[in-house]
Length: 430
Image (cartoon, rainbow, N blue to C red; front, side, top):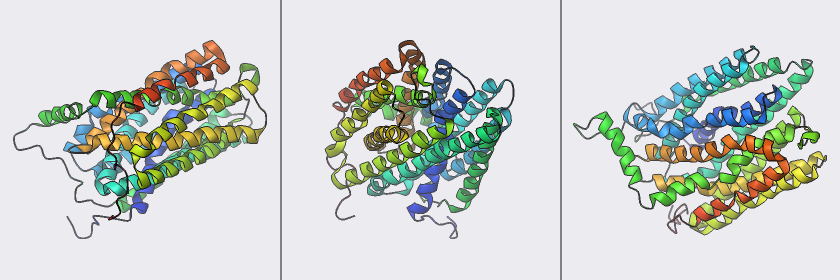
């Protein structure tokens, strides 16, 4: 390795910005698109169905994750894909004002989703290769924080900007969102340039050994076989699919619920207000929950905190039962209710993230972590697909009660997983 290429850098210099860049395309595809389509007149059923299909690249990314290990470095993939994602954001800006914007933007979101999913594989692998285990546990909160800052930027700040532009452009919603995506594209390209120069060159960031005569296809298949031979794999898959069964349905309807008129069962907030309540206040609470979750696990281990996290991720969903039945008009009360639910989700999701790291330990950890996140995405995709149609059938009040009942599988699968007592706990000697 060349002497002028640093093998390590302070994790704060690259973990923070890497996960900010990772979060931008994901939040755009999964959340910002929902708000944009709602403002452009698409129905809840179509929004939930088609944007849930956009989870598919994250579901099937394990199919090509071994190639990320077998060809080139994680650093190469990160840099290349960030350029593609930036170009995709610019393409959305150009197509939103077109008559067939729904078809065009969905196609571009598909490209963005595939690029983002592949970027996730490389970034998560880079994270695990560049940090020791106790650092991984300690920086779970940090990486979550900057991932959430990306969410604040995407579904908070930029949604507020879009709402302001809607007003200033005399209700030209398409132009407002086109300009918003142009800003987002410029921001993302800045991060592409930054990472080109700031990411370290870890010694372990190299192509995986294939063992002499072993063909790439054989190596590819072997990585999958090794994952499904892991101990307690059935319980692991059940946990990955069902831990967030309730949240998968809730997340698709939060923005439509906040935006819909009160006569339709919603809260009647403006685009900018949703950007503040859900995209800023909510994400800050989510971030604080994630930071606290990472901290307490590093002190006492994941096994000690697992059931606290299971309870805290699910119980605050009751806030949406309250909001849908009372339909308060107090902006601060609505913000506080959303913040409570998001804090609980951030705290409880720490257990999920660390469990995926635990399952991925050993050979081929990058590809195995990608397989875990594929199951995670599938667990979000399938419930999300039917959530919009279900809500339009039974209404917001009954829908959020159904969400509470949907938390039961999360408790059941948590009882099945096995976690070493010291996993995630910072050792005294470190």
